[in-house]
Length: 309
Image (tube, rainbow, N blue to C red; front, side, top):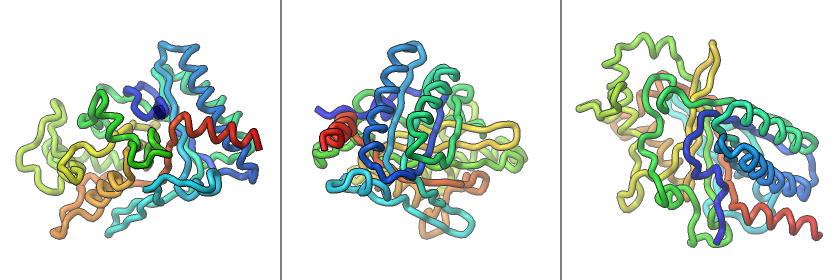
């Protein structure tokens, strides 16, 4: 049985480090070996610092996959869905590799990031690095709970990883990332009642707001599958920021990329009557990228095959 990377379905952590790379070396066998070595680093830090609940994810960019792993590709692999309507957009950032590191200790999260950077140094260039954190009881910096709809138990694996319908890539996950920047000055200028209407939930208790409308964030993100199932993706988003910039680093894992595509379409385009996600009036996506995070067995098998050639 194929095993998903541990970070795909890991429980929420206190800290995260996101690293985006472009590959600058033609030695693909070396890069494949480096990705397998990343998994070993994750395991080493998890064993050495078990109390920190370390986990990691390595994702390969949708446009880079065929170069790194020529031949067979995940059945539904697709580029990031570039969308724009009026001033709402989902920009794309060219990126070959994505590494997510999470832990309950900031020092361990940092130390593991340094190790990954050193490992990848000769073959890649760093596109972006973002350090994120858990805020209060799992809230965005706008004050509202982020991932209350995430499932638990085996349901997490069902919606976030590929099944037997694509057996060569079972255990893998379609990963989409976006970095959102909040306009906190405009957001804080709103009354709490107006904020709750935009989100569609109460701030204190996270209860549904009656008659919040078809443009609320809660309504526009409540996307169901073909058979009415909900949720259709696993949301691993975490806030990031400093004293001048605040935002949300959105990360989703799903068994099919259409889950994220449908979510994004609902938020940006909305319906035929112009009901889009009003939260986008106060939070803009500045980056976006699509990846596939293969199973542990796939990454290690491909690395061993390269060594034998």
